[in-house]
Each structure stands twice: as C-alpha cells, then as structure tokens.
Length: 311
Length: 311
Ligand SMILES: Nc1ncnc2c1ncn2[C@@H]1O[C@H](COP(=O)(O)O)[C@@H](O)[C@H]1O
Ligand SMILES: Nc1ncnc2c1ncn2[C@@H]1O[C@H](COP(=O)(O)O)[C@@H](O)[C@H]1O
Ligand SMILES: [Mg+2]
Ligand SMILES: [Mg+2]
Image 1: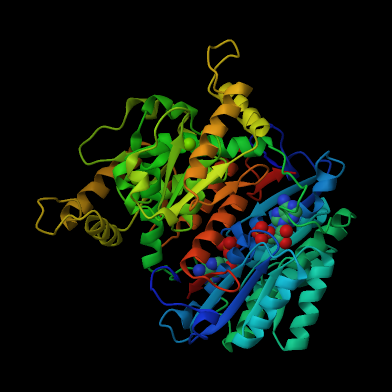
Image 2: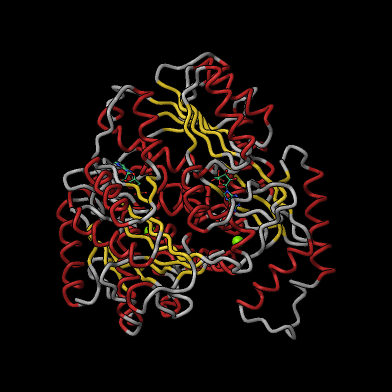
C-alpha cells in the first residue's frame, strides 16, 4: 500500500534533501496516469519487500512536461536524488532527449509506453502522430463515449444503496450484497468504464424490492465475503462513522455478521442465475474484472471469454 | 473514441470470423486494466487514422490468464486472426512461453510491463516475486489506503451537486462551476484516487452557500468552459433527459448559457484565490491531472511541481 504525502506532513525531495528509500521519477507529457498505473502494477511485484518497509520507495509524478527545458531540470534533479526515471513522451525529440540526458547524467531510465506504441504502429502500418494529448489545438471531440461515461456515472450515483428501485430495469449491471461488501466502490469503478450500475443492499430480515426479480436476471451479480473479514471492515466503518463500541449496534457483531451472510446466501441459492462473486481479499478492480468478464461472456458465449472494443 | 461491443449488436472474433480492422489481443494474468490503460493511451497516437475509421482497430482483453494451456489457446487464436498480442504476465515461465509461442506461430508480441518491472528490480536491487495479483493464497491486506479510497468515494457521492454544504469543511477538494462543466465525473475520478471531493453548482442568480467562503479557500477550484461547447453538452443532456426542444427551458439556450458563465466568472473574479480551470476540450482525467498538480503544488511549493507517494 502507499500513502500520499498529504497524510504524513513530511516533505520529500529538493526542499529538505532526499528521504530514505529509493526514488522513482515518473514523467509524462500528458496526465501521468498511465505511468502511475503501470508503476503501481509493477510495484505489486515487490510487495514481499515493501510490506514491512524492508525496502521503501518514493514515487514522484511530473505531468504535463511538454518542453525540453523542464525535462532537463527534472532529469538533473533525478540525478541528484539517485532516482530511476520512467517516462511516457510521445514527441520523438523529447523521448530521445530524455534517453540521451539520462545516459549522460547516469540516471537509469525506461520508456514505459514507447515499445507498445511501436508495436501498434508496425501492426497498423501507420506512424504515430508524435503529438501529446492536450497539445494546443488538439481539442478532444465530444465523443459518444464521453457522453456515455458521464451518463453512466450520473445514473450510478443516483441508484446507490438501493435508491429508486423503479429504475433497476435501466441498469446494465445490478449488484446485490450485504453492507460493506464493496457495492458502492465497485459500482463507481464500473460506471467509469461506461456501465450503468445499480446496487441493492441486502439487510437481514428485509425483503428485496420486487422490481429486482422482474428485470433480466442475467444482469444481477451477487457479492459475498468471508465473515471475519467483513467484521473487520465493519468495525473500521463504525469507527470512521464515530460509533463507539458501547453503542447498541449489532452491525459489526460476529453473530449478526454471520446470520446476515447466511440470510444473503439463502437468497442467492434461491436465485441460481445470479453469479456469486467472492470479494474476500480482492481489490475493487479485481472484483470489477470478474464482473465484466462474466457480463461479456454471458452476452456472447465465446470459446475464449474476452472483452472486445472497437476503435 | 471507442465503442464496446455491447452497443452495436455485432459479434467479433471466432464466433463469426474476423471483422474488418486490425485485431489487438491483450492478455493479463491479472485484471487486464493495466494493458487496457496502456493500449488506450498508445492508441491516442493513431487518432489521425482512427478518427474517420481510415484504419480501424478491434481490441480483445483476456484477463485472469493463469495457466499455459489457456495462454496457448489465446495465442493460437491470435495467429488465426492475424492479431498483435500485448501481454502482462509476471510469472517468468508464462512470459517466456508467450514470447516463444508467438515467435513460433508468427504473432507479433510485446511485453507491456516487463521492462518497467525489470528497471525497478535493478533500481531496488530486489528480484520481482513473479507471483500474479490474485494468485491463490495472496490475500491483499486491508490496507489503510483501501479504507481511505472507499471513504473518499462514500463522502464524494453524498456531497454531489451541492448536497450537505455543512460538510464542505471535511472535503479535501471543492469544485465549483455551472451545470455540465463536468463537476460530477471529475469528483468521482478524484475520489477514486483517494481525495474527498465536494462539488457545488453555480446557478444563475442563486447565492452560493455561505459555508463555501468559511472553509480554507485554497481547497476550492473553479471550472470554466467555452459557451459554444457547453451548449452542445447541455443539448445532449436535455435530449438524454427527454426534454423536447419545445419544452420551456432556457437551460441550453445560448443567451442563457453565456449569461450564466458570465455570472460564474464574476464570482471567480471576486475569489482570486480559486484557480480557474478551463475544461473545454479536456477529458475528465486531463482536468483531474491539472487539479491534482495545483493541489499538491499549493501544499509544498517545489521548484519542480510533483505528486509524491510513499510505498
Ligand atoms: N488521446 C491521446 N492522444 C495522443 N496522445 C495520448 C492520448 N492519450 C494519451 N496519450 C499519450 O500517452 C502517454 C500517456 O498519457 P498520460 O496517461 O496522459 O500520461 C502520454 O505520452 C500522452 O501524450
Ligand atoms: N498487487 C499486485 N501484486 C502482484 N502483481 C500485480 C499486482 N498488481 C498488478 N500485478 C501484476 O501486474 C500486471 C498488470 O496487472 P493488471 O492490471 O491486474 O492486469 C499483471 O501481470 C499482474 O499480475
Ligand atoms: Mg454502499
Ligand atoms: Mg453534476
């Protein structure tokens, strides 16, 4: 896991000199999110060492780096800090300048996206534009996809936590599960990908909305979780909400947690069309991957399940 | 822009034979989101050719590929479809098997994440684990970051569209702007990154909540947009909501749009501490990058603005 610098009040980098731990500089002519996403995934390969701070890493993201001057300043600073430099720069002159300066100043460096772009260029037989996203004059068109994503987010927010069951038929995906199985963050993650999601909470002894059983049952996905883990999450939740342990609430009591999960499992058994997805120990994006995979496979039974898009 | 296959009713791949357009296969032992994100960014370099379907690309994402058998089936299918294969496989045997089979069967291929992971390994002096995310027994710990992200999402949803102004002081970032400047999707995008966001709409002739002026003014970010583009977005919105053009609504009328933006700009001029961010032609993630950059730079005035995290 990581912590953003806003949490600990310490300052990194040139202001106070280098911190303990190795520095990774990420440089992009765009938002930097691609570099951040890739580095995050790659750092997963070093969890065995990061987890107890046996090794420790500080990442520094520099976005919108569009001119050589700023690029050179960053590389000089990387040299001073002994940092690794990972970059995504689409202008061939900028990429070349980065490579050259890094070699000159002894900064290890890797182009994160270059090889992928080159492979696609060779495959399509078309040269890359070399123009960064957000370059002046490059106005992104208001694409259908743009509107679709925004509509999905608006819809999903309005349907959170069982609100407006009359709209369930308009959802692409409906999630059901007890409190704190991650329905809300999962809904939001899927909405960002363009799916209109509704989530419906299962509460001990409360009937699910009738409407849920009238819609296409292949849209419904059930979430389940290990009771011990759920109790941990609920305790953290209760603390965040400021319930003391003295408050008369059985929300996070073990017996209640177990009974509520059994209540949910009974409902799931009565609705065998709903896939039951185990979320224990999974990150939100991992559960999302499972939901999306099943969703697409149900629509088109491929020999090899896949998620396809057309550009 | 892209469309998911769910929209057009066509089927791709082995069910009906190859579509026109080049195929890109993405294979991951994890969720596949890293490959998808990278390919999306790389495809931005071919917009000049994709935009009018002068060239056309079909991507196919295969996630959770954890055994060689399934991997080989996918590569064989890629060979049949004449696809490019881009992969993220952390088990060295799997990565080697992919490379070897692709060479054997004439499938062009690139390892998307390998070079980044190797660069980090060399920098840290630590070997990568070679264990995929989500491998059996690898339970992700419920980290502080996990709870922080979920809390940020819950908070942000509740504060959407000016709700509960009494909570504004608990937000990390507050967005203000007229309707359809993208406040909601931007809030959600930032929430996913762990920021607690509140957004407050500016409506012609309506006073902003007093509370907005009591909180730390350095948290507030103003959004502005070109009136012609805003009108286009509002028209699409009105259509999506089912307002006919005959409905007595000046929501998307040009004069009203201009006046409302002028009303907003006057408020921004009275609050010079608020950065005014131009969203015209920017994707949500681009605006997010600008907000986050300013946010971090305000907290720590670096010579070279950066966003730092500790792992
Ligand atoms: N739509 C796009 N058009 C052109 N280049 C893009 C696009 N999206 C991403 N890129 C490039 O891909 C790399 C990663 O983008 P980012 O995630 O914004 O840092 C940068 O070098 C961007 O310039
Ligand atoms: N937390 C993690 N631990 C180990 N490997 C990871 C982690 N996150 C991502 N990866 C690996 O990074 C690559 C991209 O991940 P994904 O975006 O899930 O496809 C895959 O090969 C994953 O196995
Ligand atoms: Mg919820
Ligand atoms: Mg809104």
